[in-house]
Length: 108
Image 1 (cartoon, one colour):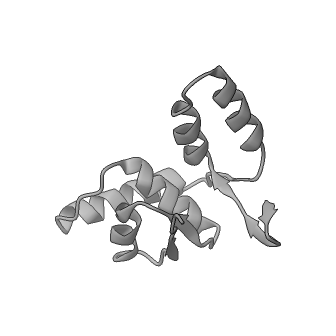
Image 2: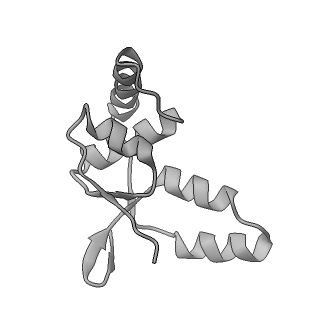
Image 3: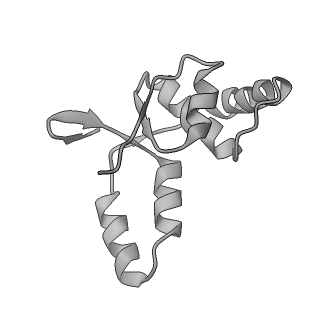
């Protein structure tokens, strides 16, 4: 776990995937890769199954999320009892059916 302004933080590997795949060139890739080194919340034994269950239950309630990856990210946060800082409405939808603690990230 890392710290920003004396507050602990952790990243999900899906965050690493999404940020690195969006690099615009080799220089940006290297900078992001270095910046993102370490501080990850890792997948637990039942994370995949529990994430699939979230997607399944949302679909049954006719609630659509853009990606099952968001369900995985949410499950990792719940496994770690972490506050999920985000800018994705899917996490608010997931929080309707799961005890997911979220905070909308404001860009200033």
